[in-house]
Image 1 (cartoon, rainbow, N blue to C red):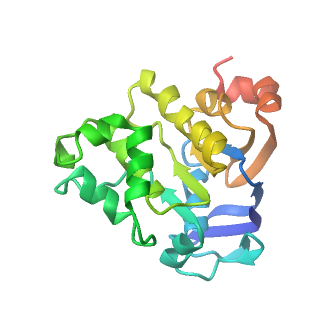
Image 2 (cartoon, rainbow, N blue to C red):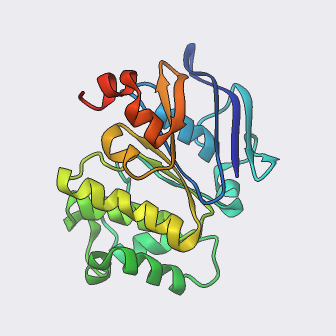
Length: 232
């Protein structure tokens, strides 16, 4: 579904990504793990069209997209859950959700999906978002991305700001989306232990380059990953 080849992205004269290769298959959960500042968020921003690409190629279903605007990529089937959620605090829960549905004609069925995944959002649908807890805002950010009916969901640091007990529950949502709807998910996550518990495969990013990749089981067993990311 997604192929990233030789991706180069920089911030001014500083290189953030240096020749990154990765791919996501149909109905696959893939994680990008690494330390803070390794470039995880930059990869997702480049795929979503929020950072200019200085080199390499991004292909979605065989089509090169690195020159397309971000809104056009949403229409193709890509949706991003940004780091920190970035919801609109002065609007209601339902209005936030409907803002994510600009690519669909009938948002009702997508609202029903979101409310089935996160019943608390249905209970608070008319509540102002600024009054929600951090966990509820993160659920809302995921729900807003799902309103675009994506084929590939890009999720950036979903565990940030969540209570530890909520992290496995939220990550399990992505496995449900894969199992029940065939959705693909690319997850950038600093919490390697929880991410590798739910995904199929993973990439370890270090200093803007892929240092390791393999199945979740292989990465959990790798001595370097254990020492650096799993607290072993």
